[in-house]
Length: 491
Image 1 (tube, rainbow, N blue to C red):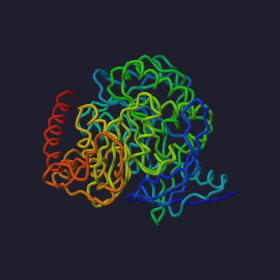
Image 2 (image 1 turned 180 degrees about the vertical axis):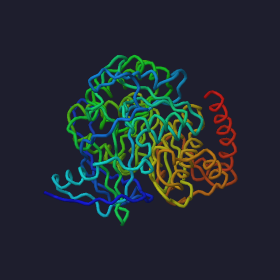
Image 3 (image 1 turned 30 degrees about the horizontal axis):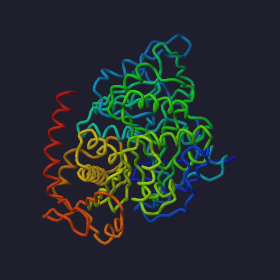
């Protein structure tokens, strides 16, 4: 028996884990076969030590104000999901699954590694709900909030429970002007006392050395947290159909079954909704997971319109060290793929199409917290995609939004504001490294190479088309301001 005393303190700034998975995809040879490649850490600037622990099923209290339907007298609630999704016409971006509440806690030490000790630790931790000041919206809420602050009309598709955590998420989304579309059918009877129906919590544990442990029920369960969901409701289908973009990431597999994710992907393709996919750190477990998970991952890589990966993830998926060549390989193996975007950490980012390469150095900022930076980056890519903004301009705004988030503390409601993004872009301070970029694009066989530069004069240099940052900023700022005003009027 292991006894643990857990002291809860005010949360410190914490950092997202570095993602350098070693992928090994074992698929049907007729499918998208991706070779194993060795682990590398050179492509990312974040190398925080991380301990991932398994979660436990937590019993969280119901809250009167969170009830969305009448009780049936047996502890179950009839959820009126339409209350959660007012008006789903003209959605710019809808996110699929991965809705959770982050609970950020300082602890004397991270959980032990043994399963039994971990379980005892989590039982002690979850005896009572922590103060609300430790809560923050997490998961795909980060991307939706960042996109909404750019003036995009956003919806989140997923499940939250009928308790205080679910009500908290709904309140945050409503305050940010984001629609919630529940995945249950009208009239479904949901047993609110069953942990399988509760809002997913992610415990973010920070020790005195600012090392992190991440725990959730999804980590502990063999099946996805909401494996009881097996079909798309008519409301979910309508939300997907009315959306310009459906965003999926690897963490969605923690909540939704591979079969349900496949249904959503195939329906989006059927109705002409563009699909964005970011496998993220979950890529490693998906590639070595169940045959169903591997099949859906392969399908996402082929059928998504836009793929977003770190340089390490791109190398792991393709076995190719050069991120541009890796992006071109993913394009070649894709069926619908139009853009492959490689996130290069402090270097910047790259956007690869079948006929062009665009490169944009990162903005120089004082990094406080990297949590939510990747989600914010995706939101800005969606902004550029929807508004048909030139590719290098799209990278510039994505780099700026990600950097602006890094200047703050935490994700959720702490992601970048439009005012901070505009301030950063006006400063026009980018991390130029001509030697690195010139070496990267050297001898590339492609139609067009465009590079964002601090140079005042546009033009070609060494077969690269340099676009001045000042020109890009002058084109982007009016668009950002106008879109934000339009978003306020529409909401």
